[in-house]
Image 1 (cartoon, helix red, strand yellow):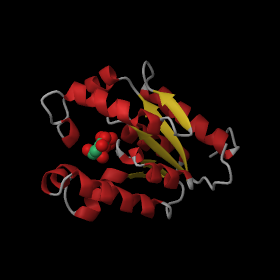
Image 2 (tube, protein in one colour):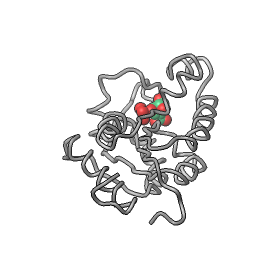
Image 3 (cartoon, protein in one colour):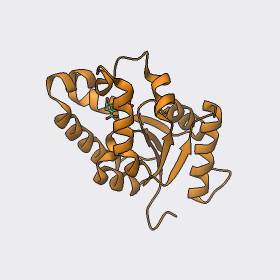
Image 4 (cartoon, protein in one colour):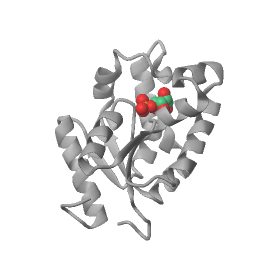
Length: 181
Ligand code: S3P
């Protein structure tokens, strides 16, 4: 399964609102790993919020920040990495993550995603007149990339605790130690 890769990190990919950050923090705590969030790394380096980057520089420059952060991640060890929802839609980013991390995609339907994000305002791509249509469109475009993750975990009808358990189980299986990180 790992095909010569050196897996010492766990990367969570998937659409906005699938729980990457909340699940990732809990997984990191249980594995005694560090937790990193690519959006937070970008904000720290840019000195401004993701919304400000989109508003002042645009999506293209934001994707460049993402690429630069992906490059830095190869130096991380024993870290759970939550990635921005569009990061793996650039295949090179996904391939790079796979060199050091088990890549787990958290999945949810457009309806569930909308329920989870509808009261949040910090996602520039959803600040449109018809956010549900945007979710469907982006999810359809990105699905082929999300499906290239090592493992797909459906978060529908599962509690956060169950998703965390499933992610840890998959990581331990990949590492060949079903009961230890
Ligand atoms: C984006 C998702 C966001 C953030 C940015 C763009 C996307 O991250 O990176 O707003 O393209 O789907 P989350 O998935 O953590 O919301």
